[in-house]
Image (cartoon, rainbow, N blue to C red):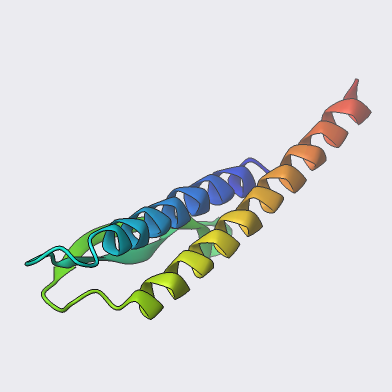
Length: 108
């Protein structure tokens, strides 16, 4: 259950970074010489029982700068994906918190 919370928190971090990068790119849309930011996102893994890989969330691996101009449509799509991902991870975090609360209530 705690790993679910950690996974949701790492997802919040990744999608927050995605929204920040897209917002920065849009803010500098007309800036001469600006290079748009792109995030490289990777999965966190930990060795589970019996050697199986168990997902532990995601993280921003690197931020790259592109020499191309900022594409407003691409950045708006990134903002929407980031927003939806953030909302999904908030719901996941709330669900894990509710489950943990239920477990603690039954133990008391």
